[in-house]
Structure formats: C-alpha cells, structure tokens
Image (cartoon, rainbow, N blue to C red; front, top):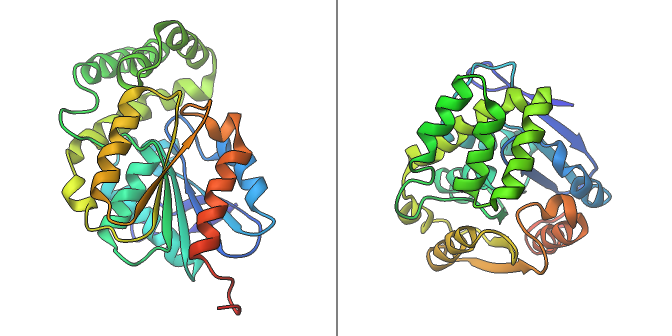
Length: 268
C-alpha cells in the first residue's frame, strides 16, 4: 500500500506493484481499484502500476467530493511517482483523468480512457439522479443502484435487477452505493466540458466495447471529434467491464500506448 500526502491532509491511498515506467489507474464507480488487479498483474512485469483508491469511494473520508478534487489527486499522485506517467481511467475515473489532463496540459505522457461518461448535452443522470438519491438516503441502496445502472448506465432491466440484488446483499457495496450517486452528481456538475478537453494534446486512446450501451459509444464519438491527438480502439465482444472479462486485451491496449509514450529511466 502506498500513501501519498495531499495538501488537505486526506492523503492518496493506492496499491503499488511492479517496476518500470509508471501507469496510474483511476478506477470506476463502486470500486477501490481492486477490480483492476488482473490488468495490473499483467502490466507489472514491465511497469510500475499504481491503482489509486479514489477519495469519492473512501469510506474513511466524509462523503461527497468534486471532480476537481479527484483531478487534483491524479495530478499529485502522478507528480509523486516521478518521471513520465501514463494514465488509465475507467468510466467516471476516466472523467477525473480528463479533468486532470485539461488542468495540467503536458504533465502526463498520455492516457487510456475506457468509456468515460462525459456530459455532451443534457445531464448524465437526468430524472434518475433525484430518485436514486432519495432511495439511497432512505436506506435502499440496492434499489438505488438498480435504477442507476438501468437508467443512467443503460444496462437492460433484468441485469440491472441482478446488480441491485448484489449490492443489497454485499455490505461493502451497500456502503459504496451512496458514493456512486455522489459520483454521478459530480459529473453532472461539470456539465459539457468538450471545449476544455479540446486543448488536451497528449496522446489518448479512447477505449470501448462493441457490447457497451450505445450512449457510451456516442460519448467516445464526441471525444474523438474534439481531442486533437486521440485514436479509437474497440474491443470486440466486450462491454463496460472488459477489465474483468478480458484483462489481457485491456492490458495490451495500455501496454501498446505505454511503449509509444513512456521511456525507462536511464534508457531515454
């Protein structure tokens, strides 16, 4: 475990493994970075892989933080690692990565963005935000997440019910569920930031799955049109959880960009 000091005293908690040029992983919702352990294991023979535990999902901290705070954590963590750092951001973690890239142009070697749900028009949550918040506040986190994954993520109703039942049955998931709603609100508070992202000139890979909800592909389309140094990679037969279902494919995408933009200290 790695702890990196922050100006506000909260510190950044992270899992640190491997040696070599650094890859900083910023996880999606309802996670602490552990879901990326298979990808990290595949990368760690050639890279130092640091998986931060986002403050939005740290139960030791007061709930509710902004994307600006999470972007600051990304920048502080990358600076602490020293040398060029490649970012890998998944879902809402990808939004935090985009905000870090926009706030500190040139501070990062590049990024792999796996289906970040950026706002491209109307709010991401829409009417579902108030419903999910009310359910979470009423002590029904499973139902809140069922509606979230159905109406916001775009998962079919039957699968959404299964996700909700899992969250309701797992104590840690029940505790994290309100943080997922905080995360949704933080994204919507940003609004449409495509103009700001157009100034990001670092190499970016926009990663998606051909079985993911259509709105996620449309958001990648919008980013592809605006980011000046982006390219698209689509994983066949995969959706929003390829880091779990096809970790070797995800690791290959990250490794490919890392080979292009990272150099081992002493070998530059």
